[in-house]
Length: 307
Ligand SMILES: NC(=O)c1ccc[n+]([C@@H]2O[C@H](COP(=O)([O-])OP(=O)(O)OC[C@H]3O[C@@H](n4cnc5c(N)ncnc54)[C@H](O)[C@@H]3O)[C@@H](O)[C@H]2O)c1
Image (cartoon, rainbow, N blue to C red; front, side, top):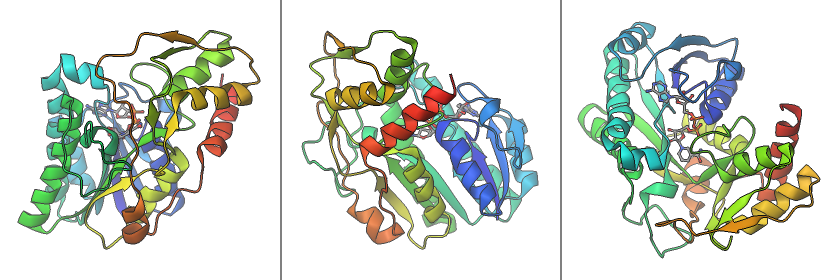
């Protein structure tokens, strides 16, 4: 297949591009390198440096005549989305539409795999683990823009029969996660522990998330490329892990014995978040292979060897 991977210089998208290249697909990576890095690019993929909102990228994607789009480029910073909701919407909604329209003009587009966000789309629900049947109730502009991308794909399916799978990720962690900006707690703490710096946990550390390893997320992207299922599906572990346990595992694998500092709880932070993953097993034949400890061991080893 000829596949455009947007965000293919980033944490998740670059590893999806690697997997697609390894499967023999012809991959065009589109990325503006705003948070991604050239060092993540697969040398066997073509690379177009550009913005998913631009006319230049649209023309190049049309000319590439993709069979499939894998959409990972996004403005991913929740706090930035609060301060600059229009920029967030332009990138996440406008960029998605620009790519889908360009792909359609190419004439060969059959399917889209979309990086959606299960963590942000269900909002502060008390239904845990949260299944796909729970209504969308995002509480940030980022949650709205990511879910809107999925809604547009559902609309394109109805209008044009375009097949799509929206993978609603939980909290993804693993090698290549950027330690700057709105990075995950695993990336930030790993970097700080290895530098010998202290770590601050905001609140009592009892807040939970569903930490899913990037290698498992890549496998979901591989399955979504050939799946008959069309629609949204959660990609998580179904297991809640609190931040105190994450910190303890990170110190264990970093070989550091240093307690965290505790700071004031962040306003509006969700206390608990975990996604039900039964549907992914059923419709994609996907289940995570990594538990959080195995994933953290591998992640810490990667940060240690890439310092
Ligand atoms: N990391 C998570 O836990 C998580 C959870 C849910 C959903 N997601 C989604 O997964 C996708 C990838 O996230 P990630 O964690 O790998 O982040 P990332 O920042 O590493 O990847 C995003 C990539 O998109 C590129 N990009 C950003 N804006 C662009 C633009 N306007 N034009 C072209 N390229 C642009 C960046 O340079 C970067 O390489 C995003 O769509 C994000 O919303 C991530």
